[in-house]
Image (cartoon, rainbow, N blue to C red):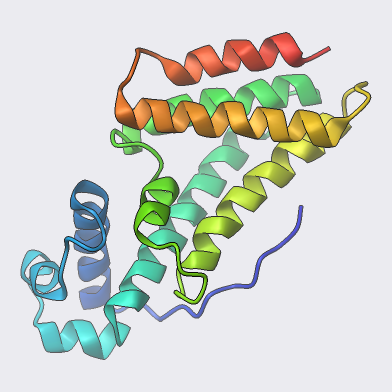
Length: 192
């Protein structure tokens, strides 16, 4: 899978960790633009000065939030893919992992999709994290599809990604029940 450029990260002090925990919750619940540094500082029990001393800017807090969430997702998925068996089983395991992750961590849908709704400027330091995470998912599906006897694994990878991402959006919107499980079943019909 292709790697994306790593964003600049900061060393986390205890105060910075508290601020990041507060920011993660607030950004996910209310949106990135709706949350100011005053609120993050108040929720974390740190001063605004401490927040700026540790992070330098709100943009860096957003970078840390999204990068940390992406790291947790990748580790979570890796655990579930370990020992999942042949490529077809591993593809379905991605959907299973997404369903359990969403139930536990993502009641409002995918944090990367939600962040992209607010951050569409490629110059924003968090933009690469958002798009990099989605490229990584596409590469994962495509690599798994290459292990199957199919005529066009790249196309299958894209189709699986579309099913997966659409299910995450539908989950966050709560348009109908169990969209990730439904997407998994649709994916299963595409596999040899």
